[in-house]
Image 1 (spheres, helix red, strand yellow):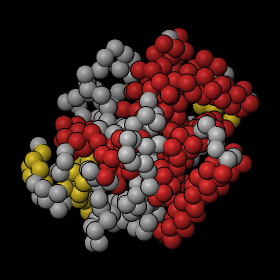
Image 2: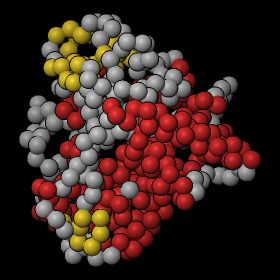
Image 3: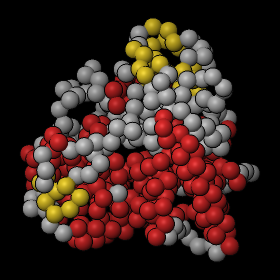
Image 4: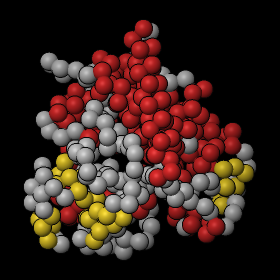
Length: 370
């Protein structure tokens, strides 16, 4: 185990081997309750770890109950019903982008934003507002701690406003499904419902957009791989899995507090230790993924014996993984079928990446359609 310095300045043991990371993610001794005063933190000030009503911050039995209520919301069958609309939006955005455009601003950020707005019944004219809140809230800059807290408060208030509006004027979008979500004898509390809407808006556009930007950047770095997808669009699905492995999840992952001694390959993690299971490092473990630094769009063709960990593993496996995977498939399918000659408009080695955000990605990606 090696200690890593978090943006907060805290030094935290980092777990990097695939088997260790996967084991910790599924271990009952791995807690997401990090709210005890004095525990190490990812960043200073208000952050994702602080809200006890957030699904990601709950442990069993509360977490088990929450997941049970949400079980039917993002099933593959429900997600497939949305695929044609996602494909249509991707096509519309590329048609409108022109011959030279910023793939980040004109496609990658807009596609998941429009999708999540339509699914949730969120007016698209509020997109720039919640995008601004998202960028502030996901900032890891210490100087931005106060602004991050203000963005969080405003974002949660907007989520509550949306829920109230849907209660007054019910429809059939995803917020209405969440309002009605329940099992035989329980339903989401008001705080849980508000937090879920907040999480869907937050994660539903920023994390997916980051994977589209990073994935396209990687493909442009390897034009032969892009040409392979153009010639064989049936490889889009395995290519998305390789993008998720090679580029995902866009950040190191989320902290865990160990509640009892746990054995990993590097020794014993004592109870009470806060650790970082590094998903990106696990996805590049050479004992699991042969030649892991090589980007190969055909790596996951067939049935991979070792799935990547970009959506996590165990009880906290990403609830929206089916939706994110489908959006990524349609984004890259649209790119390779509509823009077979896509190429970079600037030196890729000079592309500027953000260095103060939880999701690490190019700030812009200037491209030519052909």
